[in-house]
Image (cartoon, rainbow, N blue to C red):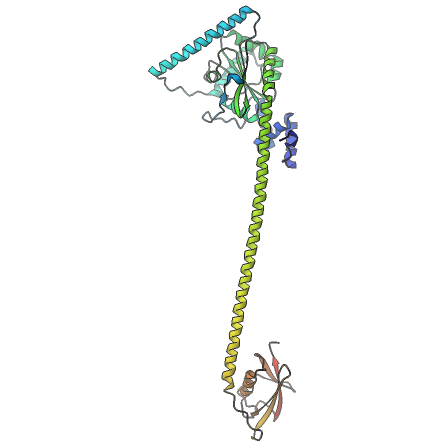
Length: 440
């Protein structure tokens, strides 16, 4: 990813926090600012506080406090290191250094062989539990009591914590191992570390400075891990190709100017690895953000499809229910019609025969159907009104629900009149009755 595009996936709020964090911390590199904020989940308060803690030499939240927690393994490969020999001012000093180096190497090898052989015969008891942070604090206290408080900011955590912070923060970790009663170490602490240029150089935001005595347990473990033989011993560790790697070391006496020059040489040779690691983190974050956006878009599309499918299923279910209801209603209606038809057939048989015109007491009724159809029939004046109602009910032109009414004055023949005779109901010799459809 191009450095110009490292903000392409950030929202307006995150870009605002990025520049605010840069103003508060003074870190010039925006990619570095973004990397720090990302690891703090864009919580600007905790990110700023963590940077201030590191500048004061205190471990960050990523360093961890438990010694049982894992720490990055440091790759100690001479082919990846810039190795600086002690400064010399003549042949005698050089020969002295070579002789001292050979003797120390022989001594360390001899001691290692003896210890290994002895451990086979008489295993050592389990080593006592030590406090690495206390060892570092003891060294700083001893240093300040002898050489004063003018020195670079020491990292006040264990070696593991320093490695974790250097890896997380993508910083160079400068390690100084001190040996008591060693004149070169005493000279280094009295002339190099108090030097104002050295202090300013090591207090840069991209460097962590960790130190300890080789005589202490924590210092001895680090000296063994980094293969320190000559003191003062200074090493530079940095994240390189995804591994914490020892990329530079210097052993023996050195002047303040040469010390800065050597460190700057190591930093310049390995700065590209930090830039690449930072770019890789940003690209990984960008890809992760892109995947999350794609996943969210896919899930939203999936939810939308599911909602559409659910609405479709509900609509189909509703339509099916409506169809079933319509079928049931039609069945009920048809059953009612069949029942009415059956009733009409049965009722038709109960209607008395039409009397002759000459028969005494016969009267003629003209029925006016809703469609204007005129039906004329004779009834006996002694016939009940029910016969008239049943006749209308059974006629094909009659509506299913109706009322029978006289013309003038209008009077409806209702259920209460069913048992009355036509004469009692007041019907005349010739009567006109109107059939009104109650469903229309």
